[in-house]
Length: 407
Image: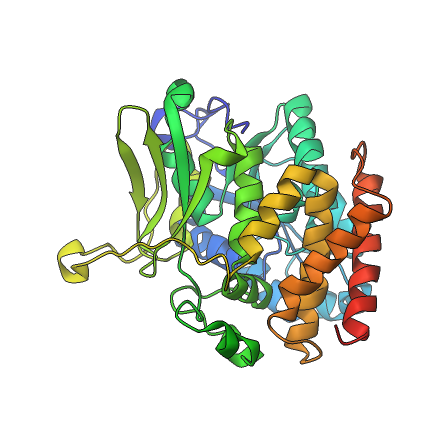
């Protein structure tokens, strides 16, 4: 983890030179992006928005850009550029389109870049921001799941600061005593269990996309909602935690916590168990990153522990949720295996949402692809970003073949 000293921030989170924080938001129209810009709009004097980006939702991006007075707006899809320019006509906000333009926006001078592009498409732009040596509020899982070693090495070489936005990793970051890290026995990531926590395995076989998208606690995008339902998301979080924190994989544990109030815990060798708690609102961890090392106000609901009454915890079921085991096996096999796991999951989640694959096929196909790749080419060392894309392409092709065969 490269959360270093506060750079040009004074104690309490105020900037030493009293100027607004220059902020770029990659993936501005997604759930993390809109939550970030909601906080920005509530405290406009604190931030100067350099750029906002989206994939193709031009009208939504334009509306957000105007609301936060962004200087630059970019869509990845060139076909959406015309709509973006029309929506921003007369606003003074400059526009661009295409994958290269997204990377160029990410590399614009900024104090912080919120990396919230969903999927492997976020890897290139986030690395472009890292290369500037800025602070990255990281919400893109693929940077660590697909290229963890490469990404963290790039951050160290550029002296970039990586702050975790994901609620579980942000929780651990808040309660991990970094000067005492050698005294840590384990860290615990919590999982809600998703909508099928109490379903029997046979019931899960026939669940629909509509059911899987109805998360009991969080409002999230489609892919992360499905990943939560399979618990693949929690498997990815184990992989991320291994790259973010200086701990071994066997020191990272998972507990199912249906209320989603305790987001992460750290257990020390003296028996102390420190936990971060909060309402299930992503604006809390986002605000922690935006104001770090200080704090800022948010409209998030405050916890009423007396009203809650009871918090419950249980071990995850490895039979009904084998994604956790598969993620640990991929982590042990190396970054190429975790990159392949992410690629297959992305393909199969899309297939499930399109009703071309069953819910349980998501994990079983991933396991088949990893077994096939390990048995043929094996999982070699990842030395550059092109290696990541090559593994990603191979895994997607194999997943498509298996899914196409109805396996």
